Image (cartoon, rainbow, N blue to C red; front, top):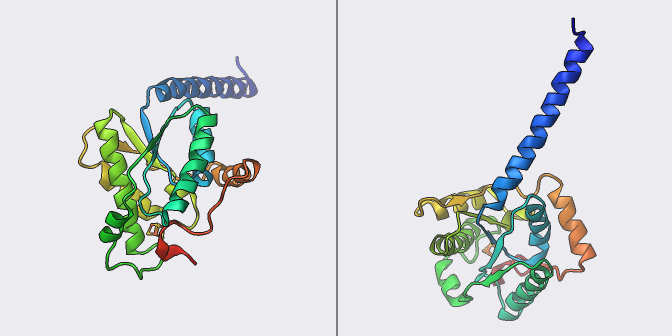
Length: 209
Ligand code: SF4
Protein backbone atom coordinates (compact mmCIF):
# COMPACT_ATOMS: atom_id res chain seq x y z
CA UNK A 1 0.00 0.00 0.00
CA UNK A 2 1.24 3.51 -0.85
CA UNK A 3 2.19 5.50 2.20
CA UNK A 4 0.91 9.05 2.80
CA UNK A 5 4.23 10.73 1.92
CA UNK A 6 4.43 8.89 -1.38
CA UNK A 7 0.86 9.95 -2.28
CA UNK A 8 1.70 13.56 -1.45
CA UNK A 9 4.84 13.32 -3.56
CA UNK A 10 2.80 11.98 -6.52
CA UNK A 11 0.22 14.77 -6.17
CA UNK A 12 2.90 17.47 -6.02
CA UNK A 13 4.65 16.02 -9.07
CA UNK A 14 1.39 15.87 -11.02
CA UNK A 15 0.56 19.44 -10.05
CA UNK A 16 4.04 20.55 -11.11
CA UNK A 17 3.72 18.79 -14.49
CA UNK A 18 0.26 20.33 -15.07
CA UNK A 19 1.66 23.76 -14.27
CA UNK A 20 4.42 23.28 -16.86
CA UNK A 21 1.84 22.20 -19.45
CA UNK A 22 -0.29 25.22 -18.58
CA UNK A 23 2.64 27.62 -19.07
CA UNK A 24 3.59 25.96 -22.38
CA UNK A 25 -0.02 26.11 -23.61
CA UNK A 26 -0.34 29.80 -22.62
CA UNK A 27 2.91 30.60 -24.42
CA UNK A 28 1.67 28.88 -27.57
CA UNK A 29 -1.68 30.72 -27.41
CA UNK A 30 0.04 34.03 -26.61
CA UNK A 31 2.03 33.80 -29.82
CA UNK A 32 -1.24 34.17 -31.74
CA UNK A 33 -2.46 37.19 -29.78
CA UNK A 34 -2.55 40.32 -31.93
CA UNK A 35 -1.94 43.00 -29.34
CA UNK A 36 -1.95 46.73 -29.90
CA UNK A 37 -0.24 48.35 -26.93
CA UNK A 38 -1.20 51.95 -26.35
CA UNK A 39 1.96 53.54 -25.02
CA UNK A 40 2.42 56.95 -23.38
CA UNK A 41 6.22 57.02 -22.96
CA UNK A 42 9.30 54.83 -22.58
CA UNK A 43 9.48 54.90 -18.74
CA UNK A 44 5.89 53.60 -18.45
CA UNK A 45 6.32 51.07 -21.24
CA UNK A 46 9.67 49.34 -20.80
CA UNK A 47 8.75 46.84 -18.06
CA UNK A 48 5.42 46.03 -19.69
CA UNK A 49 7.04 45.38 -23.07
CA UNK A 50 9.68 43.21 -21.43
CA UNK A 51 6.98 41.23 -19.63
CA UNK A 52 4.98 40.74 -22.84
CA UNK A 53 8.01 39.47 -24.75
CA UNK A 54 8.81 37.07 -21.92
CA UNK A 55 5.38 35.49 -22.23
CA UNK A 56 5.70 35.25 -26.00
CA UNK A 57 3.54 38.23 -26.98
CA UNK A 58 5.01 40.60 -29.53
CA UNK A 59 3.03 43.84 -29.27
CA UNK A 60 2.70 46.56 -31.85
CA UNK A 61 3.10 49.89 -30.08
CA UNK A 62 0.58 52.66 -30.68
CA UNK A 63 1.82 56.10 -29.71
CA UNK A 64 -1.28 58.23 -29.59
CA UNK A 65 -0.99 61.06 -27.06
CA UNK A 66 -2.43 64.35 -28.33
CA UNK A 67 -2.68 65.48 -24.70
CA UNK A 68 1.06 66.15 -24.47
CA UNK A 69 2.09 69.78 -24.46
CA UNK A 70 4.16 71.35 -25.90
CA UNK A 71 4.93 69.62 -29.20
CA UNK A 72 8.66 69.45 -28.30
CA UNK A 73 7.78 67.41 -25.21
CA UNK A 74 5.59 65.14 -27.33
CA UNK A 75 8.50 64.52 -29.73
CA UNK A 76 10.94 63.93 -26.88
CA UNK A 77 8.75 61.22 -25.33
CA UNK A 78 8.03 59.69 -28.72
CA UNK A 79 11.70 59.57 -29.70
CA UNK A 80 12.71 57.94 -26.43
CA UNK A 81 10.04 55.28 -26.89
CA UNK A 82 10.90 54.75 -30.57
CA UNK A 83 14.59 54.25 -29.73
CA UNK A 84 13.73 51.64 -27.11
CA UNK A 85 11.31 49.83 -29.43
CA UNK A 86 13.90 49.77 -32.22
CA UNK A 87 16.35 48.02 -29.87
CA UNK A 88 13.76 45.28 -29.44
CA UNK A 89 12.79 45.22 -33.09
CA UNK A 90 9.21 46.31 -32.34
CA UNK A 91 6.99 48.38 -34.60
CA UNK A 92 5.77 51.77 -33.39
CA UNK A 93 2.74 53.38 -35.00
CA UNK A 94 2.74 57.12 -34.65
CA UNK A 95 -0.81 58.37 -34.10
CA UNK A 96 -1.95 61.87 -35.01
CA UNK A 97 -0.95 64.79 -32.85
CA UNK A 98 -3.82 67.23 -32.77
CA UNK A 99 -3.50 69.05 -29.49
CA UNK A 100 -6.09 71.70 -30.41
CA UNK A 101 -8.69 69.00 -30.94
CA UNK A 102 -7.72 67.40 -27.62
CA UNK A 103 -8.11 70.81 -25.91
CA UNK A 104 -11.57 71.22 -27.39
CA UNK A 105 -12.55 67.78 -26.07
CA UNK A 106 -11.53 68.57 -22.49
CA UNK A 107 -12.95 72.10 -22.62
CA UNK A 108 -14.51 73.31 -19.34
CA UNK A 109 -12.48 70.78 -17.36
CA UNK A 110 -9.17 72.65 -17.44
CA UNK A 111 -9.24 73.31 -13.71
CA UNK A 112 -10.07 69.76 -12.67
CA UNK A 113 -7.48 68.15 -10.39
CA UNK A 114 -5.43 65.23 -11.68
CA UNK A 115 -7.46 62.00 -11.52
CA UNK A 116 -10.61 64.08 -12.07
CA UNK A 117 -13.02 64.35 -15.01
CA UNK A 118 -10.42 65.83 -17.40
CA UNK A 119 -8.19 62.78 -16.93
CA UNK A 120 -11.12 60.42 -17.47
CA UNK A 121 -11.86 62.19 -20.76
CA UNK A 122 -8.18 62.12 -21.69
CA UNK A 123 -8.01 58.34 -21.18
CA UNK A 124 -11.20 57.86 -23.19
CA UNK A 125 -9.88 59.91 -26.10
CA UNK A 126 -6.63 57.95 -26.24
CA UNK A 127 -8.08 54.49 -25.72
CA UNK A 128 -10.97 55.04 -28.13
CA UNK A 129 -8.49 55.96 -30.86
CA UNK A 130 -6.47 52.85 -29.97
CA UNK A 131 -9.55 50.63 -30.19
CA UNK A 132 -10.57 52.14 -33.54
CA UNK A 133 -7.12 51.64 -35.00
CA UNK A 134 -6.99 48.08 -33.63
CA UNK A 135 -10.36 47.24 -35.15
CA UNK A 136 -9.42 48.65 -38.54
CA UNK A 137 -6.09 46.84 -38.62
CA UNK A 138 -6.88 43.31 -37.49
CA UNK A 139 -5.83 43.35 -33.82
CA UNK A 140 -7.83 41.29 -31.33
CA UNK A 141 -6.63 42.87 -28.07
CA UNK A 142 -5.63 46.28 -26.79
CA UNK A 143 -4.09 47.39 -23.54
CA UNK A 144 -2.31 50.50 -22.28
CA UNK A 145 0.78 51.51 -20.36
CA UNK A 146 -1.16 54.38 -18.74
CA UNK A 147 -1.85 52.44 -15.57
CA UNK A 148 1.78 51.70 -14.82
CA UNK A 149 2.22 55.08 -13.17
CA UNK A 150 1.08 55.23 -9.56
CA UNK A 151 -0.22 58.77 -10.21
CA UNK A 152 -3.02 57.45 -12.41
CA UNK A 153 -6.42 56.17 -11.33
CA UNK A 154 -6.65 52.51 -12.40
CA UNK A 155 -10.44 52.48 -12.21
CA UNK A 156 -10.67 55.34 -14.73
CA UNK A 157 -8.30 53.56 -17.14
CA UNK A 158 -10.20 50.32 -16.79
CA UNK A 159 -13.55 52.03 -17.46
CA UNK A 160 -12.17 53.96 -20.44
CA UNK A 161 -10.60 50.82 -21.92
CA UNK A 162 -13.74 48.72 -21.60
CA UNK A 163 -15.92 51.46 -23.10
CA UNK A 164 -13.43 51.94 -25.96
CA UNK A 165 -13.70 48.34 -27.20
CA UNK A 166 -17.45 48.07 -26.73
CA UNK A 167 -18.42 49.14 -30.29
CA UNK A 168 -16.07 46.58 -31.83
CA UNK A 169 -17.06 42.91 -31.83
CA UNK A 170 -14.13 40.60 -31.20
CA UNK A 171 -11.89 43.28 -29.71
CA UNK A 172 -10.87 42.90 -26.04
CA UNK A 173 -9.42 45.35 -23.57
CA UNK A 174 -6.78 43.53 -21.49
CA UNK A 175 -7.51 44.99 -18.09
CA UNK A 176 -4.34 43.93 -16.30
CA UNK A 177 -2.90 45.78 -13.33
CA UNK A 178 0.55 46.58 -14.74
CA UNK A 179 1.90 47.57 -11.33
CA UNK A 180 1.71 44.02 -9.97
CA UNK A 181 3.90 40.93 -10.49
CA UNK A 182 7.03 42.96 -9.72
CA UNK A 183 6.41 45.28 -12.68
CA UNK A 184 6.60 48.50 -10.64
CA UNK A 185 10.03 47.55 -9.32
CA UNK A 186 11.15 46.49 -12.78
CA UNK A 187 9.84 49.80 -14.17
CA UNK A 188 12.09 51.77 -11.82
CA UNK A 189 15.05 49.52 -12.57
CA UNK A 190 14.67 49.89 -16.34
CA UNK A 191 14.26 53.67 -16.15
CA UNK A 192 17.66 53.87 -14.45
CA UNK A 193 19.52 51.25 -16.47
CA UNK A 194 18.32 52.70 -19.78
CA UNK A 195 18.78 56.25 -18.54
CA UNK A 196 15.41 57.18 -20.03
CA UNK A 197 14.27 60.75 -20.32
CA UNK A 198 11.75 60.78 -17.48
CA UNK A 199 9.24 63.62 -17.56
CA UNK A 200 8.26 65.46 -14.40
CA UNK A 201 4.63 66.12 -15.30
CA UNK A 202 1.82 63.97 -16.68
CA UNK A 203 1.53 65.55 -20.11
CA UNK A 204 -0.95 68.36 -20.67
CA UNK A 205 -0.36 72.03 -19.84
CA UNK A 206 -2.75 71.73 -16.89
CA UNK A 207 -0.51 69.17 -15.23
CA UNK A 208 2.67 71.25 -15.37
CA UNK A 209 3.57 71.96 -11.76
S1 SF4 B 1 -3.16 65.31 -16.22
FE1 SF4 B 1 -2.47 63.67 -17.59
S2 SF4 B 1 -4.18 62.21 -17.75
FE2 SF4 B 1 -4.95 64.14 -16.90
S3 SF4 B 1 -5.68 65.29 -18.66
FE3 SF4 B 1 -3.59 65.97 -18.33
S4 SF4 B 1 -2.36 64.61 -19.60
FE4 SF4 B 1 -4.37 63.67 -19.46
